[in-house]
Image (tube, rainbow, N blue to C red; front, top):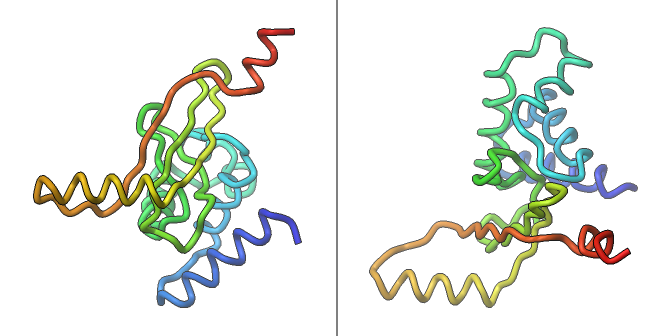
Length: 150
């Protein structure tokens, strides 16, 4: 079973457990995001979706993205207005650090329970209750660094 197949099956299982509906379009959008292997914009998704669903319009994609975000299956990369698949499906409370390469655009998600704990403690010191944390870190990925040295 491929990683993509595992993620899609896990998403479907979580939807069944939560009593929410994973429509074929939502599943297709999630599959497109997973297959992209980097962040992807809503309009890039729309172009890819039109290959199998020519009638697809921007609201189709945005509704699917809203659902996938609400379920914790994808993350929005705010600084690039794009989306990536979550690497930890079913753990909506995790703290995500998105490592964004300013050279090639690659986005990798990492997560750290200790960082989440520190952020929660800091929030509580100010009387603030955090729902989730997404930290975006910009820099140069390992692959691009290696290419510069060659």
